[in-house]
Image (cartoon, rainbow, N blue to C red; front, side, top):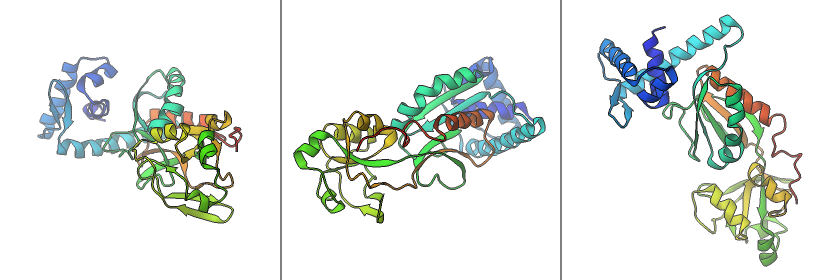
Amino acid sequence: MDPDLSLFDEVVRAGSLSAAARLRGTSPAMVSKRIARLEERLGVRLIHRTTRRMVLTARGEAFHREVQAILAAVRAAEERVRDVGAEPSGFLRVSAPTSFGRLHVAPRVREFLEAHPRVSLELNLSDAFEDLIGGRIDVAIRITASAGANVAAERLADSPRVLCAAPAYLSDHGTPASLEELRGHRLLAASGQLPWLLSGPGGEIRVEGESLVRTNSSEVVRELTLSGLGIALRSLWDVSDDLAAKRLIRVLPAIEGSANVGVYAVTDAAPPSSAATAFVGYLRQLWSPVPPWGSDRRVGS
């Protein structure tokens, strides 16, 4: 394996020459010299470099996809030959939804890194549906009914969602006793989250409507709900503590969000790195068979 190819991959994944140099324990000048040597050999410019930033050229983007596939195939072959993988190491870029990442991923990063000290981790939180290749993401945590095409996805946990409201709202506006009454209440949802797809004793239910407040933030919806502004459909991983403490009350408890929605660990279809495999295994251990927000938690009604 050409060592300059693996260095090029590390530079792209780390985001800069200096970051890759730190991971390798060498100087940025040496990394830059080797990348320049690779470009000279190929006869193309792979990276636009300035003192402040690094941007892949169009040919560099295409070449990096090819290099990733080659390195992944080599890693997989080595793992098969050794039978047992080496200690996880290298750069690991993880993305997760903002609220979920803050509540359930970030607090557990320390334990993972202490168990795998040779892994260098970057955690990015965003509610956007991150592109693995474009974002150079090794593991994406997605809460969805469909993890997407041309990826490898493992469902790590269910993500039950319940209708809920603050006691103050229910005191002022009453508690809906049916779906028909629910449709007449103030609804709260982030952009793109309505209509609600629900499941009840009678089967699948679709609730149309508009949010009383427009926002692109699911965290804002949670705060608005806690303030007593309306009724929201919230994930138990987000509000189970609020339900247990009676800061929120379940509405129409026989009805929940669609059971198709789950928490997935998504990786590229190519074999993942040892660090990515270790991280997914760590999350599986945390959230399976019953996650901390699971049905064994007292969530109120």
